[in-house]
Length: 190
Image (tube, rainbow, N blue to C red):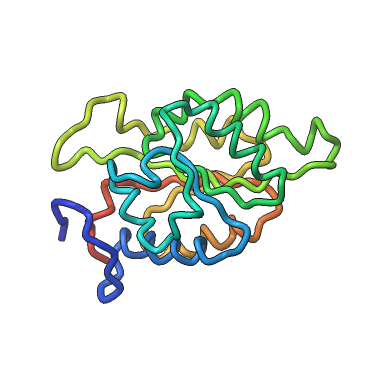
């Protein structure tokens, strides 16, 4: 069954979307987490709705400036925060490749293990239904990212039962992680 729009968080039937809601709520309860990105405080995309259980004081809204966002994420993580950096479209994460590949992925190398960033990059492959947003909003660069990143694992969530485990592992991991969500699955039932 495919729903037209993502529902509000509902724990009766665990859809991909519901699992994301539950997982973001779990992360939001952790004392060291902070969420930042576009549409984290104000509605504008389906990812926003998955943050309904995250307190507003843990959310930092940023303008569309992806490289700056990932740079801020790295900096905040060095203060002891676990940063959930949200990029609603994988296509626009490409604008932050310098920070991702040259800084976040190599931080431990160029600091000789002295610094460890704890950034969980949450990125979406844009939905193509019910309306196709155009080729610059629905790209999937998962495999290319896996080839470029040496220290940061790239996990693609294809089923609801993978979601909590992937984010828990990312939270418990000493380094950073990149988690790819398929927004085409947000309305899909288990």
